[in-house]
Length: 150
Image 1 (cartoon, rainbow, N blue to C red):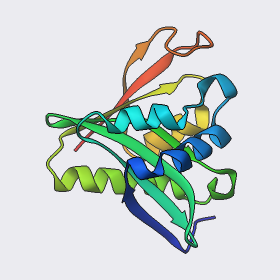
Image 2: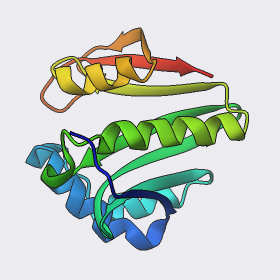
Image 3: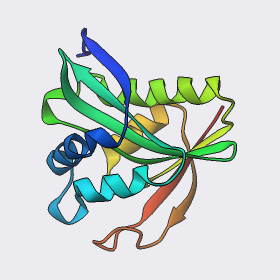
Image 4: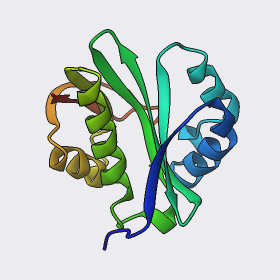
């Protein structure tokens, strides 16, 4: 099922509390990022976020940073009300479209090898596995490094 009324807009540091709340609903307790953690990301130049609004309510976001002609997805989170409705794929696709517009040639991310749904989402968006980071997460699990080429 996809969302019929979904708006994707750029959002900045003023949304850190919203990002933290959505992140808390989407990740295990030891993986949740606080509002101040999000604030720290926005203090780094060229960090930005896209937020998904369903009927005016925030349901998800994607946080990324630009580095020369490449970019990195720092995190992606969707509330339960937006899951399996196309919110995450719309956020990724909107980010990719934006990156094409500004001539970014490559987009990277890390995803847990244990997170099959996220890996499937990224593969469907054209990402390919480029490597592995051993014991990347707090629980000791590995991460696949994935890349999308523009």
